[in-house]
Amino acid sequence: MAHVVEDLFVYGTLLPGDVRWPLLERYVTGEGTSDTVAGLLYDTGLDYPAAIFDESATTLILGRRYSLRIDAIDDALRELDIEEDTVDGLYTRVEVITQSGTRCWAYAYGTGLDLTPIPSGNWLNRPTRPPQRFDG
Image (cartoon, rainbow, N blue to C red; front, side, top):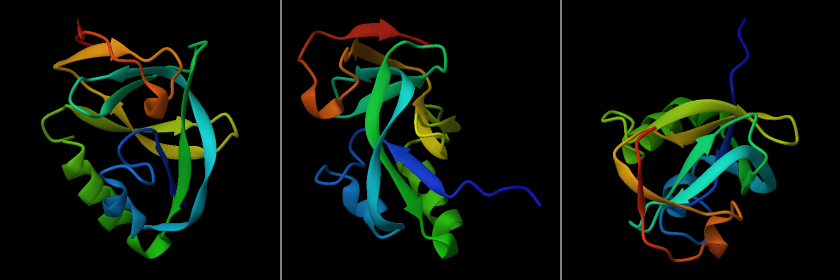
């Protein structure tokens, strides 16, 4: 039997206290754990970030890892896929491995936005800069 990925890594507006946390909150168990994933974080200029996960990157994306309620994983992922606009390709749900070694779902940038790098990898401490076009 294949292992079911039960955790979700979040790095932006799905974090506690941000605008979309209430969408995720009902699907998680516990308080989550601070964690990081190798990659690059960008500011879209639209009040939400975009991540490009890359195992070979020397920079880290700071976020939080949550265990999803086992009885609600399918519902949670279905709702989050809609919210993250995976249908039109703005974001894609991908499997990542955090620095702690946990396999998680995460939402990676697809294409079509103007992006500004966030060198710190921390959405909550992002600088404000003019956007640069990046089509991955």
